[in-house]
Every structure is written in C-alpha cells, then in structure tokens.
Image (cartoon, rainbow, N blue to C red; front, side):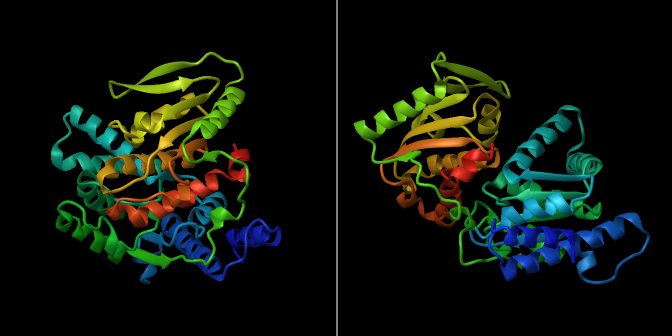
Length: 358
C-alpha cells in the first residue's frame, strides 16, 4: 500500500473525511503515474506501456468532489523535490510576465515559448495545476505551444478541473484555433473523472454569520460591528499599490482588514493579477452590496469568480453582503457551470474550519 493511500485511510479513520472508492482509485492511479515518473527520471529504462508515454494526468469532476483535497494529499506525500504547484490563474500571470521579459530581451518570437519552457524545466519536473480552465483567446493560443514544449522535455503535468477536455474553452472566441490543444491533451493524458455524491466543502459548515442579505440598515449595522471589532480601533485609510505601473487601490484598510463595495473591486477593470497583488495587505476582506448576476453583468461576474479563487487559494477571510442569499444568486448563461465551483467555494469560506486554518 502506498504512503498516500495510507495517509488517506488514516484521515478516513480519524473522521476527517469520508471514505470513497472513487477517491481511492484516483490515489492509486496518481501514485502509479508519479512512480513511473520517478523511474523515468532516475534510470535509463525506457517504458513502452501506454501510460508511460502519457505526460499529463487530467482530473475532472463536479465541484466539491475532493479534487483539491486529494492534490493536497498527494503533493504532501508523494511529490518529488522539484515540483511546482500553482493555481492556474497564477501560472498564466507568471507566464505572461515571463514572455514579456523575454520579448524585452530581444528573444526571437519563435523561441519565446521554448525558452520559457526551458526556464520552467530548471524549476520543476512535475507541475500541479489547480482549477485548470481557459477563459480568453490569449491564454488559449499560448497553451498549445507551451504544453507541447513541456511534453518534449518530459515535464509531467497533473491538473484538476471541473471541465471534460472536449468542453474546454467552450463557446470561446476563435475556438477552432484551440481544438488542436484539446486533441493534444486527450492524446497525452490519463483522464480521470472524480465524482462523489457529497460536496466535501459543506461537511464543516458553520452557522456563524459572515454572509448577510438582504442589503438593509440591519445587515449594514452587523457588518459595521464586525468591521469595528476586527479593525480594533486602528486608523482606516485607503492604500495605493503598483501593479505593472498601474495604481490599484485597497479600500478602507485597517489592521489588515479591507472593506470594499462590490462595484469598487469587481466593477473596475481588475483581474486576478491585481487581486493577487493586494493579498499582502489584508487577512480579511469585506465586500458589500453584491448584486444579482445576469448576462448584462458577465464581466463583473467573471471578476468576482476570479477574486473568490484568489481569496480561497490564499485562505483570506471573507465577509459579504448581497441583495439575495449568496447561494441563490443568479448567473450569466455562459458562466452557469463554472459558477457552481465559485458557489461551492463560498460555502466552504464561511465555515469555522476554513477561518481557523489561517
């Protein structure tokens, strides 16, 4: 029995998680994938089995099925010394920044992606991507070349997503140019569907009130009380930070607590990179007056989804108010499936366990 499986069963025995055969199968498959990788790295033996020629382990499943939990487990127990684990948003920010620097250094256009892949190879033998998804044409065009270079260099990739490969970048602009990448992923990946009947993010649910609706004097008063308690009498002021030469404002900051109106943080042209840059300034964020989403507010909804991902990945406490209960909030039509993950994360973010894990 592998160390990863032992650790998983210990967690089940302790009552931390509920035993699930689909998860056990995934741990076994991942363990085999990583073991083959170790052998290919440290010996001259050439494996001829189908799995040994596959450089990617593609895990997809419904929100809350335990994908991130199992990635935590396998990376803690089984990952080699040289591995990189990043949320996919963060990785693409890093990628665009690196390509920008290479262009500034007069790297030829044809050598940009290979040179960047070489830089990643020096850093990691295996890359773990959490929440893999493609939302824009710029990323879509880079990924095909980049993953091809990773595979040439025998860099292994493990990724989690809610999306079956054929549905990646669905309905996206010029999607036909992205289809060869989908075929590459299908050809080079072990594709594993992880589904459970329970949403594991709801198991540690708490009744503590940190999400408030509707928006009225009573809920505003409750948020004011929380803000006063958390800021502990410290001075309140806006803080300006620089992100690639642009001024980004962190609103109403006091004692590592920031307070925004929804329009201030999701109504402007901010993205994951801006949100990531804010994180050094606060441990708790209050977002007030979240309105219902619709097709007319799709850009604001996308920013909100990116923001929740960033906050969740860095264990930032969230307090919010919304027109209607957050678990009943609407969605733009094309974001309905992806938004389920956001709602699931929001469920977990109001649990005692999430807030006590900082």
